Image (cartoon, rainbow over all chains, first blue to last red; front, side, top):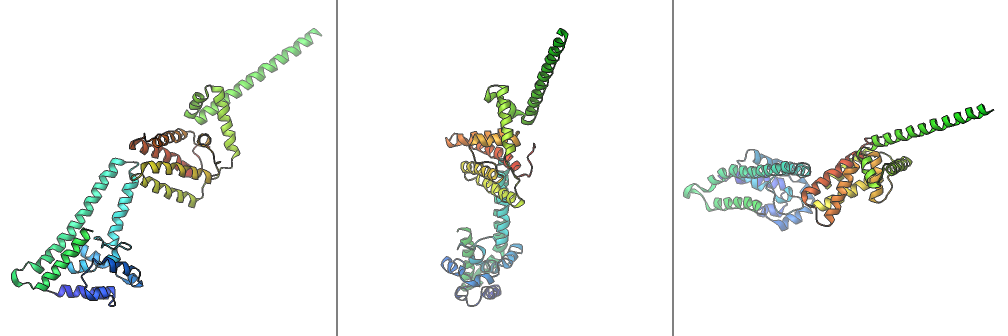
Length: 169
Length: 182
């Protein structure tokens, strides 16, 4: 049952570098703005895996551990400490669409507003989908009667907190 | 002897008549040329100058003034840079419509200066514009009016949006290598 977490931790360690105090002390913590800020100044940041792990979770969405621990705030939102919910590539795509819409306003105000509405809906759908995908696997980790260890519950709560923190920045 | 004088006088009269006809037709042709070139701007000038003759003199002077300038086309890189600037200004409209209008106006001035139009007041600028872009000078003036109205906080968002489109119609042409009407 804990395999997923170990795997995640392993990947996280290798991904972020084992000399990272954050990783060693608590691999699942992703809301560490103070450390994240200092992280940005270290050259190590460049070697971090940026997109791939996150993308996987978006596509398959089965591994909550992957999803949460693989998107350290430092990587996905360079310059701003809070974690980004969407990975860099996806964010950029949305941002490009937004810029096009905003540029269009002068020529077609109504169309621009309609498209903005559609874009925001898309983003919300995407986030909803992300949560729905992870919700299932996460639920199996704690919703199995009395057969779940406190440690698993603790882990599960951390995962929820991670998602929560990224929703409520 | 008498007949010689009469013949000479007759010839002179004829020459004068022909000369007058020639001048008249040349003036008409010039008038037609101006009318054809300036289109609606011709009528506008007649109105503002208060007479066709004055308008023709004015338009004639404008043409001579612009011909004396060494207007140059923008390089590709300049043109691309200005296009990017415009995109930014247009995008800014959503947050600061009034400022976007001001920026658009400044951007047009900047492009004009890059193309070697002289730095001058709006009247002179629009006069110069009217020579090479006679169909667009009315847009330029309309945008200007809205911009002034906006300074008095009396322009609504839709008017400002119109101003933006007016400005762009001229801006786009200024970026092209050759004016619409040579």
